Image 1 (cartoon, rainbow, N blue to C red):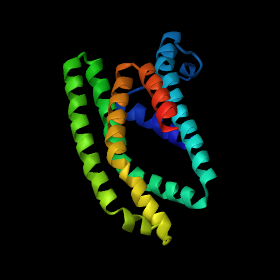
Image 2 (image 1 turned 180 degrees about the vertical axis):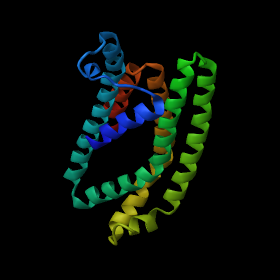
Image 3 (image 1 turned 90 degrees about the horizontal axis):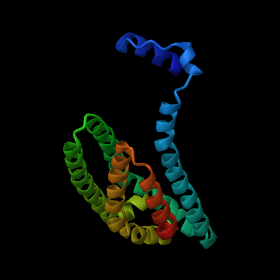
Image 4 (image 1 turned 120 degrees about the vertical axis):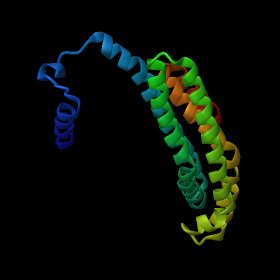
Length: 197
């Protein structure tokens, strides 16, 4: 509630934007339809990822505590490799949304390619460092040699997985910025359930 009040004060002062209370219950069907056109498939893609992740985690948990610990630690290290991809994907989505809104489609396409080059390059560099330092990094979480050895092997998959994930994050966010949220949902269903699970 405090954050909303602060937002309204800032919007009023900085943007000279006045919100009327009647706007809280009077919605334009056209605007709501546009929001839901992108929002529902985007939420569906997110839901698809989380449910597939839960199923994968269930399968791994059936293998035993050591495998579950290895997977958990590997996921924590994967987040280090993913963080740049996520940031570049979100940043690119904002830039491309502005460019598409301004009708500058060629610049939007060039921005996508530039973001892909930067994102994949940074991800490959980060992944190589994490994979080379895998044993000491796993040693921060555990002293069990079987988990450290299995985790180091598991992270080798990241050399292929992370550049692909970067491509996915940048392109999917860019498509969403253009108003296409259905293709990412369908591609996500196929890749998450058909490949990952």
